[in-house]
Amino acid sequence: MTDRLEFDDRLLNRYTVENLEHSHPAVHAALQPWFAAFGDFDHTSLDRLLAARGPAEVERWRTPAQAAVASIPAVVKTLDEAIARLEAALAATAPFAERAQLEGLLESARVNRTTLVERVPANLARALGPAGDYDAARAEAAAAVERTARRLEDMRAHSEDESQSYRDLQPMVAELQEVWATLDRALGALSRQDQRAVRGTQDARMRAAAAALCRNLFLQKTRDRATGRWPAPAIVPPGNSAPERFAAALTRGDYAAAHETLAPWLAGVWTDTRLAETVRASAREIAAGFDLAEPPPAGACHVSSNPMRYEDVRQDRTEGPTVPVEVTEENFIGWFPIRIQTEEEDAYLTDMDYVASCYAIAVKTPAGEWIGYLRFEE
Image (cartoon, rainbow, N blue to C red; front, side, top):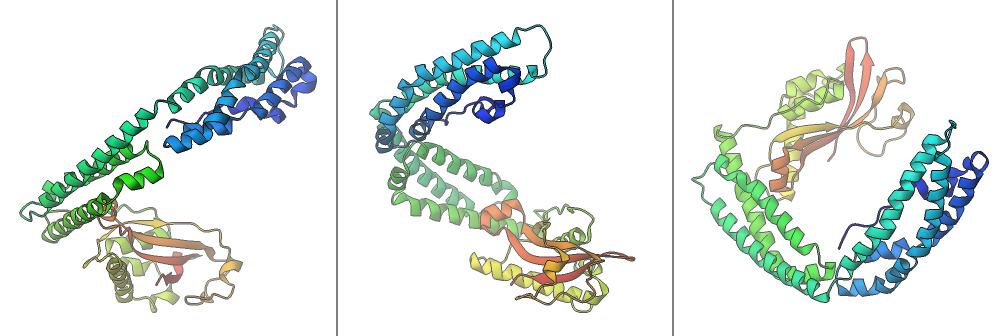
């Protein structure tokens, strides 16, 4: 229903002030009752109530949360005593090493006092609002579901006009995202059970319309790319290491450039033709899983680092080719997972976010940095 309570953690742990026991014993002693009182304060029940959705959840946490609120005056009393001691210590004119620490503790104490005295009661009142508020929210959510279903079907029908270019249709991508966001906001006040009930039979209707809309948009985008009416994805190289150059070349479809990053002992095994066939086959196989006749083009690449050491890659491998003997402890740079991704918008329209994935070992040689081992995911 509302945000969870947040307390300033500079004054929540007694161990953070252990150093004050000897330098400022009065302050240290005054803080101990506060730590004990806050430790007993049931802020967990308050958080559960404030996060409750629906009358059943509210009733479950109502009594313990109200008991927690009833204990606030006693908790605040210990905090007020700590504040007074902190203020008195900071009133001293002589310099002392812990001044910044005490200033931070005093600021934290005042923040936490405001949370306890003002925010907790206000949030509790909102959480325990009239039952009619929830009924109204449920009715509005039901109406929002119906509006969403109709709007999605209207958008789907509009997208079926093949005379329109993708440039004309592209604003519908942002519109679709906003449609879903608006529905999520309307459903957000309900319990999960009520969310499922309100969506009910409209859920399949909405998903079918949205899926058809996305497919129509992607097909028109594909057609316009083929005729040059819509540009191919702009490829931004991630860096200049061998794995990054290799990944960027695969993403561009420049398999000759990708081949040039391979070490001599791999170049004969992984020809540029084999690289092209492997990436294309991977893209087609993944696309088939999403019922796509053609995969979206590669639009980006991501090269990850991995903590695997040379000793790790030399262990018996259960899959893929063995690591070549030319990869040595002296020339080993690292193990790099590589993913050739689709453009972000294509991924949204098709649910297909990558076209190929592989693993590489980079090596350093007098001739430069190379890919010394390569394995594609099947």
